[in-house]
Length: 333
Image (tube, rainbow, N blue to C red; front, side, top):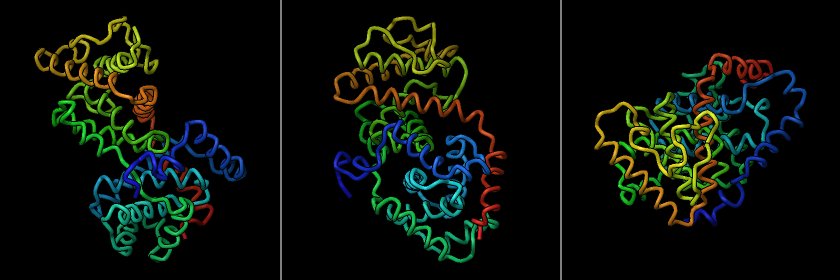
């Protein structure tokens, strides 16, 4: 494994622009127009949420670490950037990604255990024949050109925790946001440290009792504070909205919002002042760095957009549409 992300195969071969990724997916659909017509699927974000739920269920049964889960998520995105989903059994592909990720992250699981637990969860879609998983593993490795090592954002979070004076609560919230980021396209469009920094920023500005995906005026103010911090880091005189649904007229042109905007209606102003101070410190740290601030803006937008999209997710519909093409095409055999 390359110790340097900038020299890694992850950066050189598996980091795309949004346009490149969209073009690759569109090409797969264009090459499989009949399948696309016969078996419509939900938007890619809803599919990603569903696949993440499958991984969580399997990981709980075989008790694997979050890092293995994150690696499996990246494998899944890479694979489906080259193979049309409707030509595969997603239940088997998800299971294989988890199995392979455990190997690469040095937490191997016996193939029969993985097959048995997956079959317990999705008996109609997973064969008892362990060789099916072995065949899928070979196809997965082949499509990824045997480039399997993944640099992850968790190391950056751990390294900066002390330097940025993050509390345990801040750190846990940032880690949770990173976990959510792996459901998005960020792992194949952004550098790992960019994801970590976007998560840290959101963790610092979100209310402690909100957590990821929070909504309402408190979340809007917190996210507007993220916008202001990034604007300050870029040296802009006034913030421009990170997303239309989170623009906040209360911010005005001030470089950073007041503590009351970060957490309205809460009496403990000392705690709020401390939180605002950490946001300001982070903004100053960013402005002194050579980091790609526009990429951080894009990553923050993507995470916010994902939380908005998550509210419209329909698990039953997504599951029915996936099961339909798997059964109709005999991919469960």
